[in-house]
Image 1 (cartoon, rainbow, N blue to C red):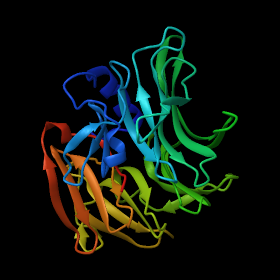
Image 2 (image 1 turned 180 degrees about the vertical axis):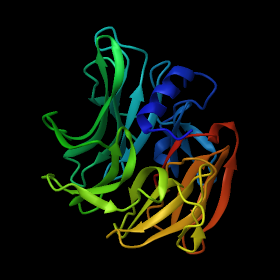
Image 3 (image 1 turned 90 degrees about the vertical axis):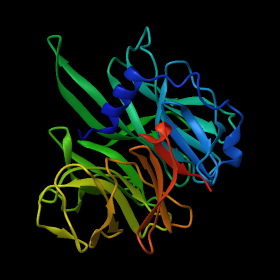
Image 4 (image 1 turned 60 degrees about the vertical axis):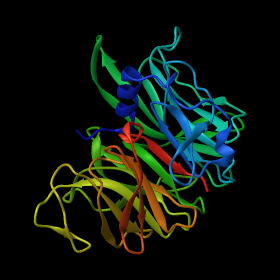
Length: 321
């Protein structure tokens, strides 16, 4: 089933707990090539995709997701779902930790029951964070839907400003001038949109996808800003994208779109929805799913399995160095 990031956080939090059974916290992030957020916590992996330790020990029965690196690549922000709070109930927050395991702190905390913060993305200046907020709408004691918006959070003051509504999965251009995101209609993905930063106010379609995809998620700007990769499942059989047939339903594929939104191509199937991570030199993309940690080389679109195992059935990777 196709699912949103916020829904995934609720599922993970209800079904898994990272404490016990995984690598010990060792500050291994300073030696990591990758970091993987999943039910084992924030796990550092070496160049062979072998776990070498946790970045930090997270609270018991919590789940980390959607991490992102700071502009100087020394720390990360991530979503954390924990057991319900006595004051604000069930939800998710945004935390930050340095790769050496120090500086673990909350950046954005949910203010009410069933409010979920996810997908943090640093401004290139590191002065602000862009986050997806999903809040349940309850009327007369009955759940009737969600509100979805992307907020800009001033990290010095904590002030939160709504940038766009009906939005999720932000990605920020390396120059900090644009944000591309998943536009939602009736809480379902409706296409990729773009808005200027930091002002906002000019949100508009970036890539026409309504007749092409039944689902899409997690756009990610390349380090140069020249391309965006995202995960999607196709709507039309018989249609072609980049010389490959668009598919129907699972499996999903990775797609690449130029930074100006004019050219779309398929990078090949991934078996399920995945969260792509660019290599620092923008020549490769890593993703995790269906029991494998896979690295794709863009030049020839060759997908190589770096590691296999039950720890790779789902997870959100970062390519640290």
